[in-house]
Amino acid sequence: ILTADVDAEKVQTLLFSATLPKWVQEVKRKFLKQNHEVVDLVGTDTMKASTSVQHMLLPSHWSQRSGLVSELVKCYGAGGRTIVFTETKKDANDLTQTLSEGSGARALHGDIAQSQREQTLQGFRSGKFNVLVATDVAARGLDIKNVELVIQVEPPKDPETYIHRSGRTGRAGSTGISITLVDRRKEGLLPF
Image (cartoon, rainbow, N blue to C red; front, side, top):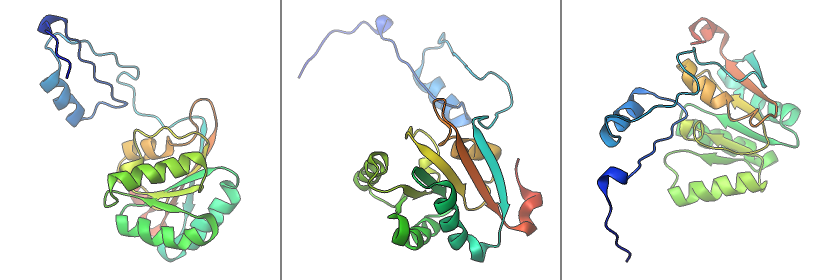
């Protein structure tokens, strides 16, 4: 065990966040000194989806989604990695079973143990399989190279979630495709 006398005035605490939602603001107030500095690289501009990503909206009935996702992966994701976002853990598991026959897809969501999640992400990064079916647990904080395609099986409830999901592709100067499936009856409810 190493111990040291630490001068509280010389301790520097840093907080990094890609976004500043209310809960991050609370953490900031709790742990940072009152005279802290904030470096905001976005400013008060409206959040924007990446311009290096081709954004597409595809009308579809819910009963067509598993077949359609499979075809989209073959067409647009061939040779690269694909992340498919679902709203629920059950949807992620069900869709993974459907897709795993052709692509070796794996699921990633909150009911999967952390150690298994890490193994799944490592397998995806290393190319052991090319399709990751996930809930929003994979929408933020992951930097995985060569994700060429993001498919959202239904539109998210808010623009910020869309931006984070679609932002898993087209990173670090590369381009990507984000396809959102939507039931024609719900097109008017899109948050973006």
